[in-house]
Amino acid sequence: MKYDVVIVGGGSAGCTLATRLSEDPNRSVLLLEAGPEYTDLESLPDELKLGYRQEASDIESPFNWAYRGQGTSEQKASMQVARGKVMGGSGSVNGQVFLRGVPEDYDDWAAEGNDQWSFVNLLPFFCKLETDMNVRDDFHGTDGPIPVWRLPREEFMPVNEAFHQATVEAGYPEDPDMNNPDSTGTGPVPMNNPDGIRMSASLAYLNPSRYRLNLTIKANVQARRVVFDGDQAVGVEVESGGETFTVEGSEIILCAGGIATPQLLLLSGVGPEAHLSALGIPVVKDSPGVGQNLRDHPLITVELEPRDGVKLATIEPRIQSGLRYTAEGSDTRNDMQLFPSSFTGLRAGDPLQGRSPDRPQGMRITCILKLADSSGELTLTSADPNEPPHLDFRYFETEWDRRRMREAIHLSLKFLEHPSFGPLIERRLTPTDEDVASDDALDTWLRQNVATTQHTSGTCKMGPESDPMAVVDQYCSVRGLQNLRVVDLSVCPNVVRANTNATAIVIAERAAGWIS
Image 1 (cartoon, one colour):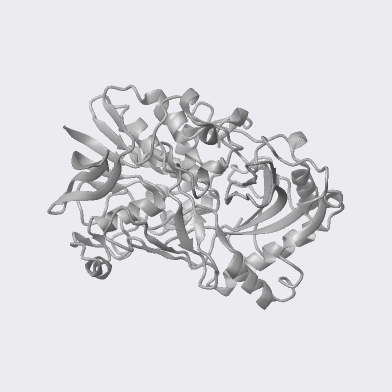
Image 2 (tube, helix red, strand yellow):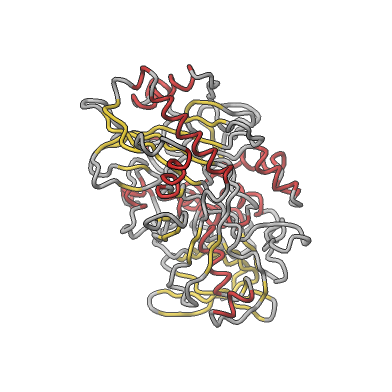
């Protein structure tokens, strides 16, 4: 059977796109996902269903692709890069923050020749995708698939309340709605886990639509390469149940995310000619931008030992509140984020970094650089689809990036001096006093301890024909090829100043109307 549309990747974008495209009963849609699927909430394993459970992003989890990446050349060990291998993708294993980028993020995309992606153009789609349970105004949706809520301050964990007091008294404005276009400051973080349930796009979009006669969903099917006839994409070579075969489609849409999508294009012969030729991959299209422009948010944690008896999060949301601010001397608003968290029990850990099996409990302040100057690259290590790509993030290569993260560390240490933290903290574990004794010492510590926020974007960026590094046009069609699109975070010219799940979904909502 030949489908009208074949979608590769059942993550946040793929589930959203499959749902929207199959609203037309005359269009046949096939959705392929390499991981397993669960057709209802009752059958969903607890580590996927329950928001406080973080082990689905552990390196040994069957639901995690468990990539490895190099953060800096000075890093002693590679970083874990968790990506969801299950229907719902990374939105099924994430920390459930549902934060939009600031309007300038999308307006910057538009200014680069992608005028369809301005914030004004995207706002109706942000409203369409959500049901905001706290805020009712023109900037929020009331009947969309994704529920969005914020933890009331009276339910904050002690570390979150202390952080809130410290940031307010330091002069930062209270921010009750971080998805407001003018948002900045300190307050509750918008989440998509009401009643503790991680509401992925698989649950919110796909499951209510899965019995449409024109929608076919196939799990445990791994894509190996796109099949071309000349410059036209005509199908996808896949592997399932030990067999390799080709599924055919009039249009092929890659929604496999910022890592697997460029990897799949490279394996298919679409990418930098010299790189492909070196691996013996026949070149279908010399596209130098594939795998380049790897954008992400570098992350550093200030680790704390809590005093005995302090209440720590067990089944409560790990991420509850935070601070978004503009670094000193920066002309990019909200380019920094800090958030406190606490954890305890067998599944202790931060949702951005998995469990901490050697630390049964703890507290931390997480510092995130939201708009880095530095960018990295993704390259193949082999022509074998089963071999993971090489991820070189190249964090902190500019003094501006290092300076802003140094400021974030010192700001965190200042907040910890607030009297509200006194009853909570036994001692600071890292960074040590020696680590913060000088800029050079702190830079060394940053380079050695940086982690990823798991927000890989930009590796197949959109742009005008005049941009030689643009892989797709602003309508998500791959340049120089027919019947092939990319609809996921890899098309972003830059990563947004926010967690990326909301943007992944809005990309699919926006692109759905362009697919005939």
